[in-house]
Length: 193
Image 1 (spheres, rainbow, N blue to C red):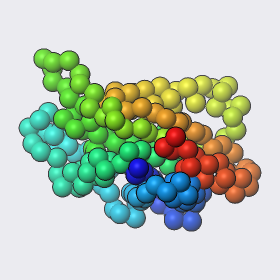
Image 2 (cartoon, rainbow, N blue to C red; image 1 turned 135 degrees about the vertical axis):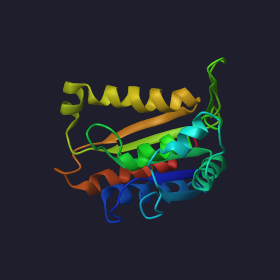
Image 3 (cartoon, rainbow, N blue to C red; image 1 turned 45 degrees about the vertical axis):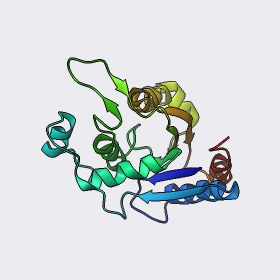
Image 4 (cartoon, rainbow, N blue to C red; image 1 turned 180 degrees about the vertical axis):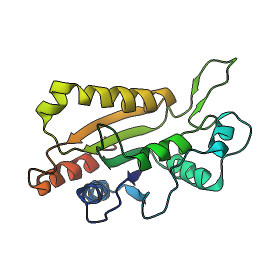
């Protein structure tokens, strides 16, 4: 089994990168393979342009950078997104990756005269968000539920993918961030159970 771990953070010394590394170690410990897609260091362009809209409308084929990312996802049995929570959502870099890569015709099939076809039913997705606030703040304001509705349901269910886990690692700025590392490694060991 193969995992694609997508990281959306500009600083390679960040907790986001450390958690992705621990997930990868957990995957390796169970004799599976992984690939880390570091969107920032690889220079992925998250801007959804007129060319991407033309892909959505089936007026053109996806550009080479999108095709390369789709091929990465196609090789994966599990997709793991590791990202900091910015304003109760994922960073623009990761959202732009989803906007461009999970395109009409590949992730789903929609035409105005047809029923939606979800095309990623074979894919299991694991979400790891890193937040600075505490669990009480997320619960009190409904942020966790809003993120699940937006990301788990709004993105991945729309494409037919199964969200295997959705984890928020909180208080990343107020407690010792090393406390989250064992949880990430354990997640990696359970990806293919």
